[in-house]
Each structure stands twice: as structure tokens, then as C-alpha cells.
Length: 195
Image (cartoon, rainbow, N blue to C red; front, side, top):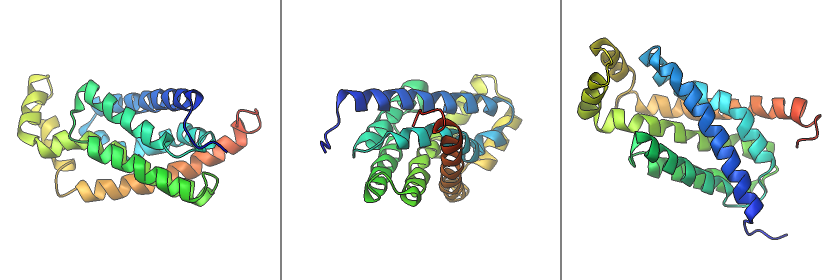
């Protein structure tokens, strides 16, 4: 078996990265409703993203696909205004997730669930600007039309003290999203012959 990534592998990575970004963007729109929803991204995005991610895992057989996806996500996050602050976390989660999945030869259900839990930590990169550059980020929000109350609630929910809780929640719901996604993929997509 040739373990080198080929053009079709990069196409698969590109398609699923775009799909995952659409999920992230759609969930991100909910943050306009209330800042606590922004804190809940660590629950919402891994759960909703579990289905496309499990479809992606079903097509992943080579080391580097998850890593490449994480690099693309880091680039997308930068282009969409989140800066480079979260890039190390995004890429590190992709590499570690890739290694975990590879440890199960990309076939182990348990390793896949664990891998997705780690990979889901990329979502936490959304919080880096809020935590690291809180003062300037608050000013940008106020200039952008957000109320002081919105900002107060956002920084109450997301700060250096709550960061570890958000990271743990993201991992747990990443695993849960993988478990639910796997069930959906087996029930619907496998029957349709997609996987």
C-alpha cells in the first residue's frame, strides 16, 4: 500500500475542510444572539461537526490527511480575522489526532473517537483573541456595534480562568460528536453506499 498522499487525498481533505468550515461558520452565526453561545462553541461545533468528520475519517487511510486539514483550518482562521494566535493549537491538534488515528491503522473505532476529540480542540483557537488580547478585542467589539453588556458577558464566560474548562469540554464533546457521527454514518451513509 502506498502511504504517500496523492491528488485525490488532497481533494478529499480540501472538500471536508470546506465542509467543516461551513459548519463552524453556521454555528458561529449563533454567537450574535448571545455571548454565552460563543462559549458553547466547544459543545455545538464538535457535535454538529461529528457527522462530516466521521465521513472524512471513513475516507482517511494515510498519515498526513488530518495534519493537512489542520493546516488549512489555521490558514482559514487567519484569513477570516482570527489571527495566528491559535495556529499552533490547531496544527498541534491535527498532528496528534493523526498519530492517534494512525495508531489504530485508521480503522479502530475507539482510536477514531479519541482522535476526533483531540482534533476538535482546534475550535478553542476561536478564543485566543478574547483571552490573549482582551483589551484590544473588547475595543474592536465595541467599535463593531456590540454593547458593553455583550462584551462583559463574553469576557465573563471566556477568560484565562475558564480556558481549561472550555478545552476539556471541547475534547469531551469532540469524542461524543465522533460517537454520534459514527452512528449516523453507519445508519444512513453506509446504506447509501457512500462509505
